[in-house]
Amino acid sequence: MNQTIVSYYFSRNTLIVFAVFLIAILFLFSFLAIIFSKFIWITILFLSVLSMLLFILIPPFIKSIISFNANQPALILSNENLTDNINHRILKWSEIKKISNYKSSKSANFIAINVNNPKLVAQKVKNPMQRFKMTLNKLIYGFSFSIQPNIIKCNNTELLNTLNEFHTKYK
Image (cartoon, rainbow, N blue to C red; front, side, top):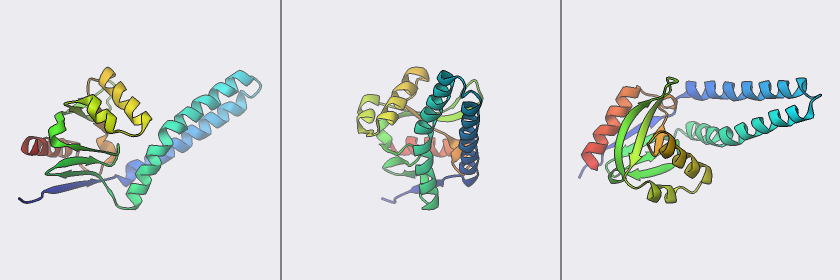
């Protein structure tokens, strides 16, 4: 049987914009902490929020930069599975129930992926933050996890259509 593989790579422009965004947040919170340094509790609040944001945002960003520099694909679609190097998971097509477009009220566009057995997939995830994020996605949005197509160098509609085509053909 022929092995079909389609790869999608990280978008350089999105990574640059995200880096600028992180730097801007860092400077903003540092500036506010300095301004409100007379009020120790406000300074502690600003620094706590900054620390939480950096703790949540920096590790995936660093992994994305490393993958981009190593020219590693963000997504790999093959006959057997979907390899998601953004969220660091590999799913067999048979584990996926549904792939759809999700547009939130704030115009954020996601590709929502529902799996047949969310608990089984969550057990495979080693990172507790990723497991928690997956649980929240299921509770809040109704899908197991999402792919943000804006960090992938491709057309969003094309990506969704290709994912659905692979899912239908190889599930």
